[in-house]
Length: 202
Image (cartoon, rainbow, N blue to C red; front, side, top):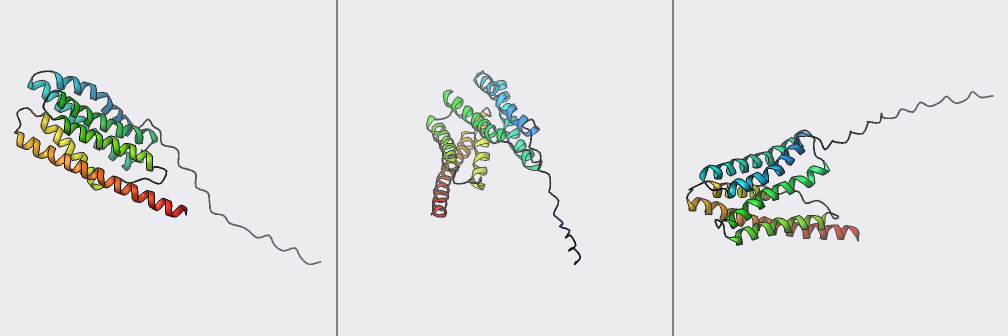
């Protein structure tokens, strides 16, 4: 009787444990919530008369703008990206910029067409994101980031008491142009993404 064949030792790669889910309770999301909470205070300060209150509104606006940059950095640097943050962060951004533009228009310091153009672009791009999400995600462009910075500076200059109008309008005009241009670019990229996805499905 032949000897039984020796058993073969099968070595398998160790299974790496799945990374634990990121908790929504983290510093990046906390900064996003803080940014949302300070918007009402910003609005109140903006409607109160006096340069002191206007500077207070400017301080709150700049603080909120800094947290916008900081929470994004922390989320990417330490892997704190969550579903809550993906939803709350753009809402907080639009609430801050949108409320500032509307309030300035209500105060008669900014033409309504500027407010309508910028808010319509932001809402349109947000709606378009939901339309094309099933085809893929369009990453944020450099132009989009520049647009955000320009909007922050443009609104900030309008909040500074007695600043030269030429400085305000040069920055706001540039912000509007870049806002519209990046909106058109996003539409073009969304259409291309949809076309590519349809070709792959054929």
